[in-house]
Length: 288
Image (cartoon, rainbow, N blue to C red; front, side, top):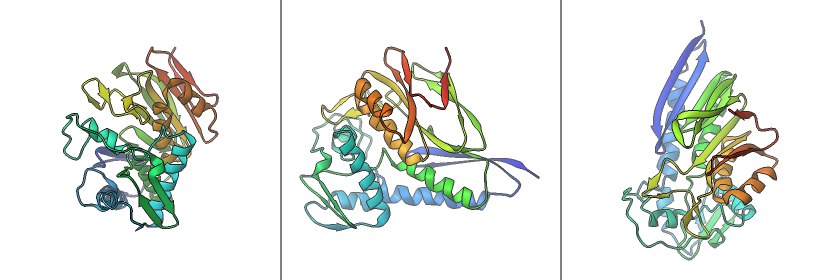
């Protein structure tokens, strides 16, 4: 008999919801997926002192051995940084900390440090950080975990499920998703039918320190002001997650060009004046 299951778990500073339909009880598999997410958080979160990432970030000017997973995530991030001329920057942590997005969540302004992705030397299985830069995986972590969890469910034979990780999603079997209105979060401005792909969004409305939000232009250290919300659809959560940030922090004109000229993604941008633009082929729609 087919049943509807909903599981929720806090991880990586957000909540992962797994909504699925199955004739078999998926509880044990889902719990294993939650453990996978927790292990990733323990290793890669910048908010956990003395973990793997903290150790890496405090090892400067030395060759560090890294495994294939870390190498893939770092290489992907550096390639996107190069493509966006540093607008997407996996070393943005120093600037974020200067706005109070630190381990203590102090939300107190403080002096910043060096931010520039080209101060990272990445070779096969080795990494060197220069000039005090630090890595962070906040723009890729949730999307990557969505891919891992989806892979586990599909490998086990599940074909009808929705994963929602703080608004980044992967769906199989057809789920109509409402798109939040950036100017009134109690409303939706459109929908998207999620079936066999991922969608991620970035916005400056939810994480603020005073008038400042966390989506910063690494070139200026200031929040992007002319975009309200970005929605990116892609075949993987990793690509959708990373590009939603990359498009947003590129500002409106260059963000639109990045979205238009990247074949792996489709999506839409809601601008700060309330207007919007969507790429041809975007699988969602906005209410008129």
